[in-house]
Structures are given as C-alpha cells and as structure tokens.
Length: 59
Image (cartoon, rainbow, N blue to C red; front, top):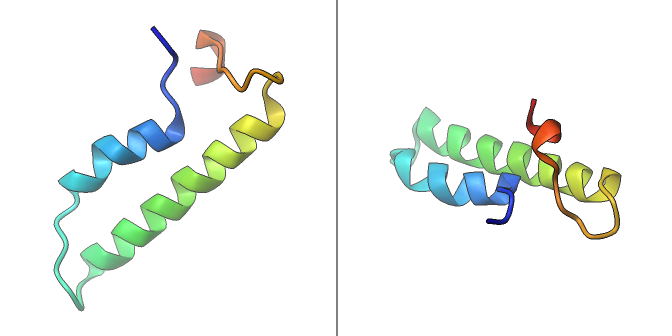
C-alpha cells in the first residue's frame, strides 16, 4: 500500500469542514488547504526522487 500524502489528508478532511459563506468556516477551509498544500510541497522537495514518504517521516 502506498504511503499517505498531505493532499490525501486534504481530500479526507475537506468534506468534514462545514462551509457557510461569510463565516469563519470558510477561513478554516482555505487555511487548512494552504497548510496541507505547503506541507506536501515541502515533503516532495525534501524526499528522495521517488517522492515517497517512509513510515518514519510521519512521526
């Protein structure tokens, strides 16, 4: 089984965030997306060329 990525987490978490316009939930949705996207970009940049994460990287 492939290791989970930060963007996989996003696809799991995003539907759980209740979205209502003009509320803090929209800010949480956007901030969570940007944080996970940035973490994924760092992971890819810092990982070996295959882009895989070892189980030790999740600790």
